[in-house]
Every structure is written in structure tokens, then in C-alpha cells.
Image (tube, rainbow, N blue to C red):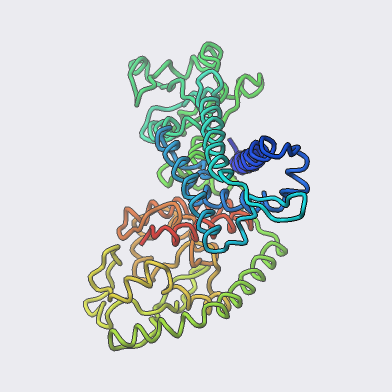
Length: 477
């Protein structure tokens, strides 16, 4: 499944479920109005209802569904968890609509109509009926689509060439996401002694010399090469024959791993893959548009958040002595050093013993600091860094030179994250929990590399929406 297919699936889910919500609302109104007043379906849509009203309710429901992660197809979840999220999302959506009806009485006519005398009339029980119908439609639709995508008979059958750690890790990730439509039929080894050995559920089904025979026997759709060392081990003749025959698609393990997980595995990565993978050239128009949008939104952000700046500055000053702003050197694009600006969230003497990793529950953080970090208010001054061209809204988070020097020595390809401007938020921040160690830095690097390779304006927008969702739910640091 290519990256484009992920967007297609997400849009399809959104479009179909928009139709389900609209259908539920219209049917609930038709059922009530037709039984009591003999109203036709056309009258419900045009005169007594109006499509604009339906779209308002649909927007509220869809936004709540998004907040509950129902359109995040890159996250593995069990069927039970999925259904629980649907029930919770539908309930919250209609609670929100109920509060809107209560606080703004005029909106009750979203579930109303104008009678023959032109008087507005609220249709009782229509919201409850619509909620039940929405829940029923959503569960039925998701059951069907989940079954179709995960059914073995409809899945794309994958054969993995290799039996090393990278091959097993790839199989583990694929098997954890059966709803993506993949099924691992087995592994192929160079050693005949390994045939029949189980590797994380699928077993070794043959050796590389039998590759063509195995593809035909197991009805393989995709051959994935996940060899730790290809020099002298790559079955070139067999793969070439498969390619010429068109028997199966041949793909690198790193590419499949990237699509399934939304990150690039550093352990599987080789310099040649980065060089020849493509997708990294950015046109001047793309860069200019991106820069223009960053400046525009930074200016708007500064204007709208200015009252919050004053309140935050007063709170920081009242709680602890020291400056309101915190300035620190960070590594930016192409390794340039710049000074990042944040609202101070720690004690003034927080690093009197030298640089240390920031922790999620850091005892150096003040009470005001804990709050402003939770809701990301401490990041607001970085609008200034964006206006200066040192940062963007989306990109890898900038790290301190002290830690960058350490991580460059410990983690392969770590310096590649400096190919783009650092960001206020990023793909790693919305996909990975708070990190404060070398191991966490490695995990985040994999997401950063994925972002750098697949950066686009649409991807940036998606990350910003995900960041808003994280702030609303209070997740992350």
C-alpha cells in the first residue's frame, strides 16, 4: 500500500462516514415528520430541513470522530478497541450537539422544520433516533470494512526473503496491522536447515534456490527482500526471473516497513537506499509557498495569542524569580546554530550542574511551567523563530548542540534530520510519546526521516491537526 493509498483510504473512510451521518439525520427526520405530518423526503431536505443544517451536524460528528482517532489508519487497534472508540465518539458527538442546543436555543431548529403556517417546530426524539442510527450505521460499516481488509482470502500475500532480525521485525509489524490488507505467508532462507523453523508465527517455507517455485506454490503477490547483508547473498537470478515474468511485485523491506509503520527503520537502512529512494527534491515554488504559509500563520498566531503572552508572563513572574523567556542554543537546518525562544517553565537554576535530558515529570519544572508545557503555551514565542526563518511550524524538533554531538556518534544517519528546518511540532511528536534518552532519540529519528522523505503541504496540515488533537486531549509531554 503506497503512501498515496493511505490518503485514499483515509478520504474514503471520511467520505463514506459523512454519508452515513447525513443519512442517519435525514432518515430520523423523515421517519418522524412522515409519520406525524405526511412530509415527503424531498420536503425534509429542501423546505423543512435544508442541506446546510445537515452539514453542520455532520461537521460536528466528523470532527469528534477525528479526535477519537477513527481516521488514523496507521495505528494498530483491536476490533474491540475500534468498536469502543466508535461508541464513545458517537456518544460524545451527540452530547456536544445537545450542549449546543441547550446553550444556544436557536440551534434546536437544526432538528426542526417550518410548518405550513411558517412557524418553527422542533421535532422531538429526532436527535435520539439520529444518534442510534448513526451508531448502528457506523458499527455495521466498520465491521464490514474491517472484515474485508483483514480477511486472508482478500489480503495481499507477502513472502519475505531473509530470516534475520530485520526480517522478523518487518513480519511483526505487518502482522500487527492485518487491517492494512497484508498477509505474511512465510520466510525464505539461504540455509536448508532453517526450513520449517517458526519465526514469529510464519515459518521458513524454503530456500532462495526455490524462490520461483515458492512464489507459484504459495500464490505470492509481493516478494519483500529483508536481508541484513546483501553482498553475495542477494538471489539476483531468481528475483530477475520473477521481475521479467511479472509473477510478483518485488520490493525492499525498508519500503514496506516505511508504509506500514510511518517511520524509516535505521537498523534496516543503508546509504544507497537514501540516495536512490527519491522524493527528497523540493521545487522552489514548493519551498516559497511553504515559507509564505509559515510566515502568514506565525503573524496570525502572534496577534491572536498576544493576550495569552501577557497572562503567561505575569504568572511566571509571580511564581518564581528570573526572566520570563528562556533562550537556548539549538541546531537548525544544515547544522546552523540558532537561539530558540520559549516561555520559561523551569527554575532559573535548573541546569546548574550541566545539560541533562528533560524528563516527562521533571522536578525542575515550576507549577506554572507544568501547565504551560502541558498545553504547549511555552512554545508560543517560537513564532518569532519562524518569522526569522530559523524554524517552521512542522519539522524535526531542534536539539541542543551538546546532545547532537553525542547522538551523531551513537546513531547512524542522525545528522540527516538537519536537512530541513526544525519545527514547533513534527511527525515524531504526534506519533511517539515523550522521549528523554538515546533510545527515544533513535525512535524519533525514524519518524523524522520518514517526514523528510515524504514532506508535503498536505502532510504538514495533517501533522498540525494531529498536534491540535494531542493538545485538546492533554497527551504527550
